[in-house]
Image 1: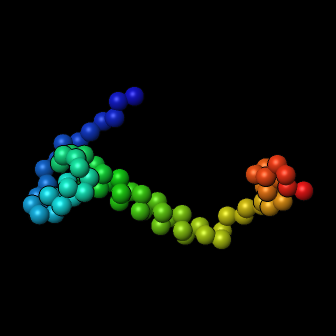
Image 2: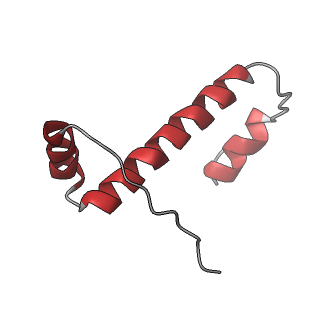
Image 3: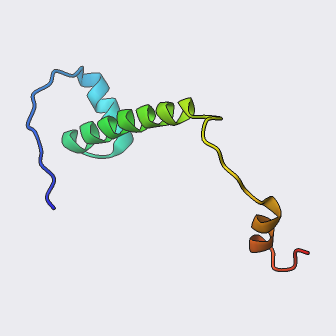
Length: 73
């Protein structure tokens, strides 16, 4: 499935764009996409941190260790 795109015009400080492009090694479009993905990732991480301690997880550590180490007794 092809991703839809939106053409935009933005005013960005030249030095900031040059710095970002030198970091990503890409062109303007790929650098802007990279920045937007980073914003989305940071937001997702913040939302996950809010769930800390609220999601019940039951793990059998001995069983997990057996899976990792075939010589575990």
